[in-house]
Image (cartoon, rainbow, N blue to C red; front, side, top):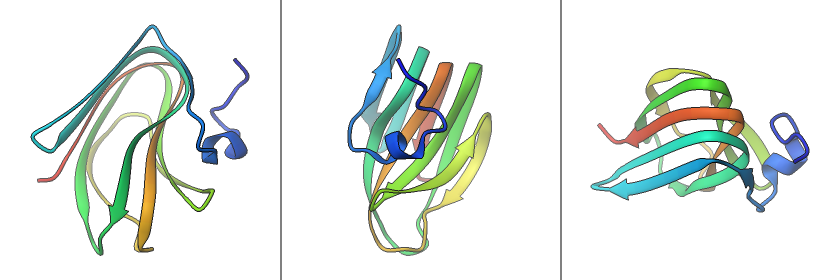
Length: 116
């Protein structure tokens, strides 16, 4: 698979490009969890209509490889976090529909997103 990690054109595409040994995603009680092993590529994990000043808590643990989360709106890439992260984030102030995507390069990770 061609490298996607830093390719903005492929990141902003609507196509999911991924290969993974394990990719498990669950949404229950307004908590999104995702676990990956040997994940390479990009995948949309949520579509979010951005309310003003909305914030969520993100726990992103990178065990191996490289990983990041990005927002996509109108084919524009908004970097969110890269590597280990455990804190709250604010949605972009720009109103509209965003796609939240996970990007990995041989990534083994655990992700949890929820409102506090």
